[in-house]
Image 1 (tube, rainbow, N blue to C red):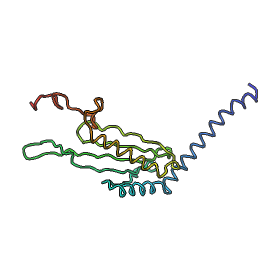
Image 2 (cartoon, helix red, strand yellow):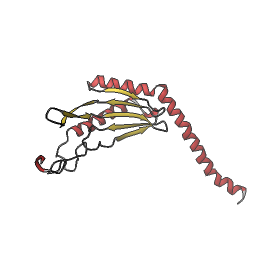
Image 3 (cartoon, one colour):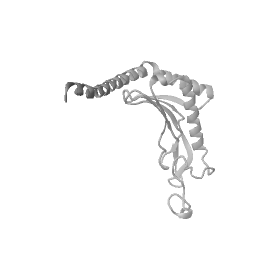
Image 4 (cartoon, one colour):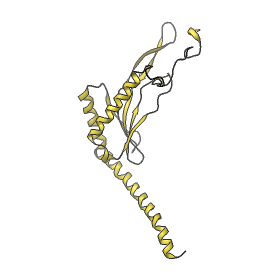
Length: 189
């Protein structure tokens, strides 16, 4: 192979190397944007939307791991209204986690927006989170927050309002009673 052929083939390799370097630089830029104000902007906007709508929710910052922080709008926890009878005098309430809208840094500095569905502890498996979007910090603009909140409220409302109008729709916490109950015994026998 002569020098010209090597240079021609190396051109594509060099382009890939340059793209790799650009992606690494973008990761640092995105992480810096999060630290320099995006995190606070997300918190401020979510708090404003809570106040504007009267939604009973709170905004929390999860910062256990550097560069993987998350801002969560959470609907909190409550008694599910269901309980396990331990004995005649004692009952154990099943706690319901009411869902959350999450803005989390990814390893590459981009922001993933997730919907965490409600679930009831010790009652089936929680539904996996729904990915709403993955955005670069500069793509996260005011109108998007309202769209994310609308989608979040729609998904949570659908989970809460489960019924048999949609025959193939499974209950939000993915556990249905069969004709013989949860444990397979009829009539609590």
